[in-house]
Every structure is written in C-alpha cells, then in structure tokens.
Figure (cartoon, rainbow, N blue to C red):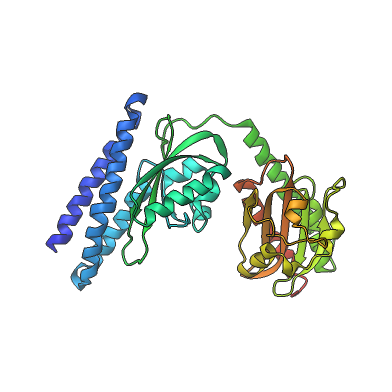
Length: 376
C-alpha cells in the first residue's frame, strides 16, 4: 500500500507540473523552445519512470491494491488526454492507438477516425516513408528521434514530430509516443484562445461535400430501383465527374461481379470497356476491401498492380494515370454488399481525409439501399 501511495503522490506532482506547462503557453515566442523541452522531459518521465512503476504495481496482483491500480490507470489516461501538447500513441507501423484532445485539434482528425489508421497516412506523401522509418527505429530501441513533417491537409505548415519509445503494461511490443509541434510557431492549445482564421477554400470544399451527400441521398431515394446493379449505377453517376474521374462498381463480396464503369469521355489510353472486361477478383485492392471491409485511400499509389491489369497486360493504374484513389466497401452490419473504387487522374487534387470520411458515410447509405433488394 505504501508503494501505491508513493506512486499517487508522484502522479499528483506530475499533474501540477502539467498545469504549470499549460500556464506557460502564453510566454513570448522566443521562450517557447524551453517550454517544449520541458514538456518533452515530462513525457520522458512518464515513459521512463511512472509507466514502469505502474507496471510493477500491477504485477503484484493483490486484491487490496487492484481498485487503486484501476484508479491510477484512469488517472494516467486522463493525464494523456489533457496534456497541453498534441500527443499520439502508436505502434511501430505508425497505427494510431490513442490521440489526445490537443492532437485532435492540431491535426483536424477525430480521435475515433484516427484510431486504427496509420498516422503516416495523415502526412504529406513525401514525408511518409521517413516517418515510418524513424518510428520503426524508435520502436526497436535505437533511441528517441525528431523530424520535420507536413500534414496532408496543411502541407505548407512544417510540423516537428518528436518520437520516444514506451512499453505499455502487459504488452509484448514497444509502442511509440509522438509529440507534434508547429515548427517555429507557438504551441497549439486544446482549449481556449482565438481560433484560426477561416479558410475560404476549405469552406468551399466542405460545402461541395454537403452538396454531394445531398445529391447521393436524393438519387438513392428518388424512384424505385428494381435491381442491385441499378442502385450501384445510380450511385456511380452521382460520383462520376464531380467527385472522381473514374468510378468502378463491383457487386457482391465472395463472388464479385463488375456492374458499372464510368470514366472520362476524352480518355485515350484506357477505355471503360477495358475495365468492364476485367475480373474483379484479379484486382487486389477490390478483393482486400471485399474481404476486410475497410476503406483504402492512396495518394500516388506505390503498387502499379493494385487494380490489376487490362487485356494488354498493362497496369490499369499506370495506363489511366491515377494519382489518387479511394476503394470503399459497401458494408451494412458487418456484411459487404459490394465495392466502389474511385480514381482521380492527372493534375486533379488528391482525395483528402475529409472526402474519404464523406465517402464512408455515402457507402453506408448505398449499402442500405442494396440490402432492400435482398442478398447478392
């Protein structure tokens, strides 16, 4: 019990120091590096001292301390969420396990959406490989690292990412704690303070997404659809042009059947008929979505064969000059009803995380419409 009380006192001291760090956010710009160094020192203290101490207390397993341990674990979670700096806990593959409140505001990504997805996917494409490499090095014990990256939604703003290793209790593998900080700017606040100046371009894109959602809902509700293929075609026509250059719809899951292919009218290198003749089962991206039921967002796809090859043997993604893609399973209650694949080509802006989220919402509506017509 004495060990538990001592641990509680140490945590209470840590909480007080965090409160002082919150108050230090208003210091002059030139003094912010000292505040950031202090915050990182406190995070190291959690990783090197408090967490192993908590593991030792947990390992005792005595009935008298189990309730106190649970309270302290909740306290640690509360501290993590309320840290004044954007912090994320991830594994060696950069998959997010936890995202605190400040990190949610900093990245513009909801914690529930980020959890289970690679943090590298929220970064600008040129930074992803370096971030994954540095994360893996920290996870295998090569020491703490720091590098400059850029968020995909704000590529012009440099972000300093500081990585440190952490061993969660009862887990065999090392996790990685990452602190995000605007390079050369004051620390972002999770609460209070004036908000950023509204971005007119972002507002316009948001309005366009709302219009697209309205158009999709209207299309699915307007007029009866006698077949599942008709529902997929109706949805594909809403997305074609305004949202994606290519829209490919495949029905089913275990047995995929291609029902709709819509592409640019002026496309010379590849025709819609080339994709219609494809076997969906030969498209790894589609098969993976049908089996796993998870959305894939790729910018400048690395694997040219991810969507298979055409009749001439050439990779479809290369021939169509695909610069970004979304592959979305149409899932309802865990059952995949079909798969929609969207391509953007040439100089068109890549799909964003916000657009992927909107597409996730539309996919559920399409799956619901398909379910009304029975099983595939």
